[in-house]
Length: 160
Image (cartoon, rainbow, N blue to C red; front, top):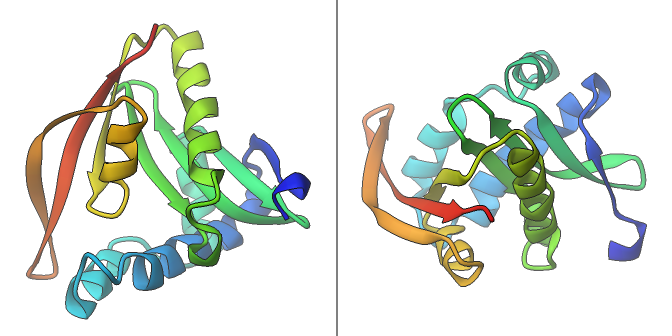
């Protein structure tokens, strides 16, 4: 499977898959760290509709992992904020290096844009893996979605 993976810039036809990857990564992939109510509040923040994700592609340069012509993971870059906006991988493909590879490409792209310090607000699912990759934790924070508190970890990485 992973040998058939292609990494590239997102195009509008990826948007529908992005919505599904986001939804399932949160609802299934984050089940061990967040309650059902928290995950439902989290997914309510972004619609599953392709049009919403196509619009986000215009706001955030997006890199996708594609297998058999389907987007199975993506990372959105906030160039102005020097941060990773989102990183999601289809839950059954998690922990196979797809997210790591997307982050590698994101770091290269940000370095090319002159970014020297990259930031992310990561879920409790992703933050331990980021720390193993050399990201430095700056502390926990939380966001509120539909009355639910979602804990996340602020991290940064120096790009050299």
